[in-house]
Each structure stands twice: as C-alpha cells, then as structure tokens.
Image (tube, rainbow, N blue to C red; front, side, top):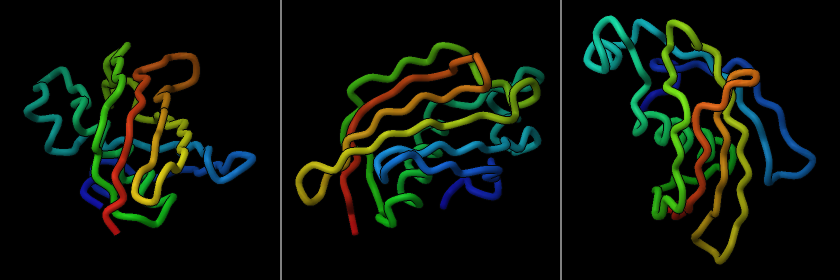
Length: 126
C-alpha cells in the first residue's frame, strides 16, 4: 500500500448488503509531504492520489493486486483540502466481469459535500 497509514488512515469500514458495495471512512494526514508541493499554504489532495487511494481500498476489499485499466468517467466537483476536510468517505461499488476485470463506481464525499464521482475498470494482476 503506497499511501495507507501515511497519507491516510482508515477510520471505519462498512460492508454493504453484498460483497459488491462498501464504504470506507478515512482520515487524511494534512501534514503529509505531498501537500507541501500541492500547494503550499493551500493544500489540495491531488486527483491522482484520490485514484491511488481508491485502488488501495478496492485491492484490500478484493484481496487482489490491481491496475487501473480504464477511467470511464472522473468528475472532480470540489477540491479536497485536508485542513478543512480531513475526514472523507469512499462509497464504492464493484462488479466482476470476466476473470481478470472489475468494474467500479465510487462517490467520494464528506457528509453532504461530494468531492468526486468516478467509474472505470481495474485489471486483476494476481
């Protein structure tokens, strides 16, 4: 895991009614070095880090090493400033199709503020 227990820590995991949905509440580390460059005095979680966190959460949930193979839709609606919003939730749905592919959709939010909506596919590597 590239960012877990460094950029973020998991506070709570809530399983859905079946294994295809789950929610993870995590806490961002506002003093992480990545925020020094993105951006000084106005920290913002980089979009690519959001994708990496999502990949780590889905990999943990499925027990597979994954690679993003397709990003069908990524809509960043509001920036994530870890000083203002250090607690965020990833609400994730995954569907397996074929033997090596997972389709996903996710909404990243904090209470009523939606930061990002995305969907795509992960390739299973192991």
